[in-house]
Structure formats: C-alpha cells, structure tokens
Length: 101
Length: 488
Image (spheres, chains in turn orange, brown):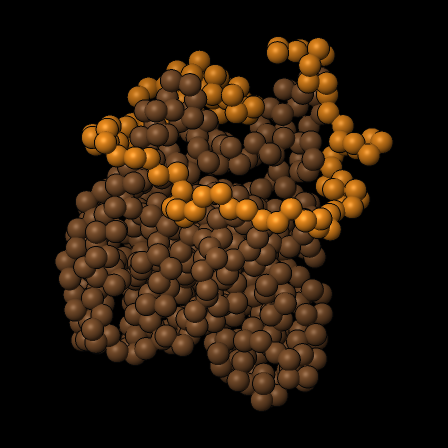
C-alpha cells in the first residue's frame, strides 16, 4: 500500500502532528512499508469472528459515588505552561484567527 | 570482593534475611547500590534520574521499621522504576522531551504499594519514548547499554530497569510490557522479567501506551524474587477499572523444584526463519531439561502466531494515538505558543515527540481514520480473537508453553534504528501474550555468542502461580542465575 504525501498530510492533520518536509517524506516511505506487512491480515477470513477490544470479560465496573479528596489548584497547575486567573490559557478555538470549524 | 559488591550481589530473599538479622542496615544496602550506580552509570546509562536523597530517606525509614519489627518482604530493598511510572518525589518523563521536567501530583498505585512496603527508590529507569521501542534507543535522553556488552542494546522498551538489575544497580525493577517490553529486555540482559496477566496489577499512574495491552511487572535476578515483588504489587485497585477483583495467592508458596505431572507445550510456530542458531539450541536444551525435571512435553499449535505482529502494529498504535492526544501543550509538558490553537497543538507535538512516537501516532490515526477503520482496526480486533482462541485451545492440553523470548540475543546499538520493521520483529514472540492477556515470564536460558538467551514461559490467565513454579524449577536446575556480567 503506497501512501502519498497528501495521505500523510491528511493523517497528520487528524493527529494534530506538525511534520517537517523531511519527516513527511520519511513517514510516507516507512508507513508504506509497514502497511504492506500489516496488509497480510486480509488473508484471514474473519467474517464470522467477533472483535476483541479487551480481554477482561468485565462489564460495567462501578464504584460508590462518594466524596474523595481532590487535588489542590496548585497541584492541578503545577505543570501548566500558561495559567491566568485560575485557568489554563489557550488560544481561542472558535471564531479566532485561523478558525476552520 | 568488597563488602559493597557482596551486598549488591544478593537476591531480595537473601537480603531480607540478612537485613532482619541486622547483619547490615538498609542504609548500608542502599549506599552500596548508590555507589555502584555512581561507578557504572557513565558507561551503562540505565537511569534518566538518580534519586539518592529519596533512597537514603526511605532506607533510614526502613531501618526504623525493621527495628520495630514492622517490615515487609521489600522493606529496605533498592528498586529502579521505569520512567513511565508516576512518582511524586522525582520527575516522570516517559523518556520524552514532551514531558521533560514533568512532576506528577500523584504516585502510580504500584509506586504507592512499594512505598508502603518500604522499598527504596534509587532512580527512574530509562525507556524508549512512551515505551515505544525494542532497544531503549528511542529514549529522547540517551540509549542504555547492555551490561554484558556495552556496544549492544539492553532491549526495550524497559531497557533501563532491566540493565539496572543485570548490573546490580538495583535489586529489582518495575517495567511495563505492552508487546514484550519487560520480557524482551529481561532476556537480552540475562535477568528474570515477568508480565503478569492483564488486570493482575493496577495500571493507575502508568503513562498509557496501549491501554488494552499494557501491564506492569518486575525485573529480578531470580524467579523467587519475581514472586515476592508480584505479591507486593498485585491486586484490585478502584482507580483502574480493568484491574481484577480476584484474590492474590501466595506466589512464593507455590514454587517447586520438580515438574512431575506438569504438561508443557511446545509450539512449532515459535521457530521462525532468521532465528539465531544459539537461541534455537538453548531452547532445545531447555526443553530437554524440563523433561528431565519430570514435565510431559506436548506439541501444541498456535496457528495465528505469525499474524500477531501485524495485529499488534494496528491495535497498539491505534490505542496510542488516542492516549497521546492528551499531550497538547495545555495542561502539562512541552508547549509552543502559536497564533492559532491548531498550530499550537501541531507545533507542540511536532517538537515534543520523537520519530518513533510520531510514526505510531500516524499509523494509529490512519488505522482509525474514516475509510480504513474496518479494514485495519476492526480487522485487527478480529484477528486478536483468533490469537486468543489459539491459546485457549492450547491450554486445554497443557499448563504452560515454553518458547524463546526473542529470535536473537541483544543486537548492536544502531543496527536496527533506521529500519522500524526490523526493530518490530524483535517482539515477534512476546506480542501474542499481550494480545491474549495471558502472563509470560522470561528467565535466563543460557548463552549464544556470549550474550544471554531469554527463555519464555507463557501461562494461563491468572495462573501466575503455575508459571512461576515451572520457571523456578527450570532456573534452580541451571547455572545461569549465578552468572553475572563482568563489570568493573
């Protein structure tokens, strides 16, 4: 399966991953090789096989809804790059410059 | 031999008896390890951070506990923690620039359990970035070197704690195993590495790679020590909804030295082209030895083994691409300010992640993307079912399965780093256990070209007791455990 640079750019946008031109080309080549190998799964007839997402066989794990100690705001912000007035600072996600909704 | 090297050469079980008999103190034991770390780290680089102050404070507290008769099996025992485990009193980086300088506000559950047990944390072990890799060369800080030959990799991703235990910088280590990241470096470094059953050990506070596959487990020098550590870290945790409510048995109590009545499976699918001849010989010798110990050797078939690698390289990157979405430069970690939020995400992640992490995020995002989801992600989940069914059928006939841990011994640093697929092949024998959720252990199984060979045992879900018993019987019948790398 040969990927194109356009494929790489599409996936990188979905993943919010900035790639340099050299990385885009390397990604195209390396991912194409890996996808070729992975494509071998198509050999297997799995029409009647259920998918496995987890091996625990557990469903609906509940806990009591009781008040527990929580972090202080200092702890919550201790690794934050930008903080103002008790909030994480981000660029406006909607309606701002470069918005592409 | 100096007193220091006598202390660092002990097993956990031996050190426990001597600590309790006051032959030496926990502070002396810790100092001996810290001195060894200081001497060996320039060549080996097992640790991203060394924490002598934390260790000595814990050792002092351990001596007090021992004095009060209030000790547990791990009180005063020096430990190396893979740096994907959150700790409040040191940094936690996952081997990534994106988490450089990160300080967790909480301990992982396994870390709190070890803390309560009185263990001593000497440092944070090196890892491939976000545990993605098979050689520890993907650490964004530096590669770790194999104590048996410093030109070779220690395996990965938990290469730091594996090499630290092999070099006696710590008496045990904790790693994480998503596709072999405990067992493969244990094999490469000639130590014991145990991946427990998925759900046996809480993953709370483990920086997530692939949540349906990740499991925490110990590196030790002996199987008995692995049993001791597993007893200390296993059990249900309300903070990890996938952790099992099953009781934790006495793993140490079920160890044995003969294998009468035990059925051990051998699967032809665990021999592939390109295998190192010395590895095949070592495994063949081990199978003979198991028969001599009384085991019945039974051929079994695991026909979908050859598809496990491809299944893994869809499932694990898909889960990783979702898990690593949280590294966006807003709440923690490396952050690049930019005019728009999308650009800020892209530049932060573009700068913060290394090439293997980017590759896996791309692969996982692709497999989950519109138009490819059924062909890749769902397909892989279905093949995962087939792999699990293979094991279910095999375990109707046998108690454990024996196999090589890896097709080769440790390769040279730099040999595979430019060829991702060759690197992925290093995990071809360890990945199936993660797909099925079953426990696996690598124990020293001899040498090939002067490098350790890992012998792998795979067991039934939640039957680590039998797995450890068989591994112990094999280990006790062999000289490998007494052989250590010739470090100065």
